Length: 122
Image (cartoon, rainbow, N blue to C red; front, side):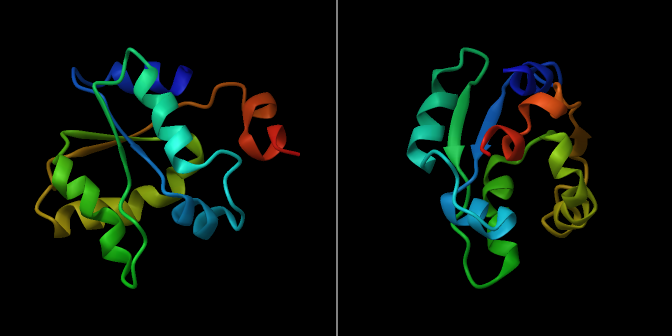
């Protein structure tokens, strides 16, 4: 996967947070094509990935969704190009959690006209 290759270039220990089904539903307005356990297993198989974990289950407060980032305490957070709109809010949350030294990197798209999930899942 191009996304994981790009992310791996930003650090030695690549930890991937796989979105929960409920998070995908909330953010995209529809359930994911593959269940969270299937997506997690697929990411865990990738040799570039040191560890893959499920994101925090959505709770009543938005801050709960950032708990996994606090647990991991990363130096760098890589976001897919289609997650760029979350970067500013994430930056504020990192400061709130005392992780203000963590960098946020937006990864490049890989042929988005062809491989964007909204196109592929039509």
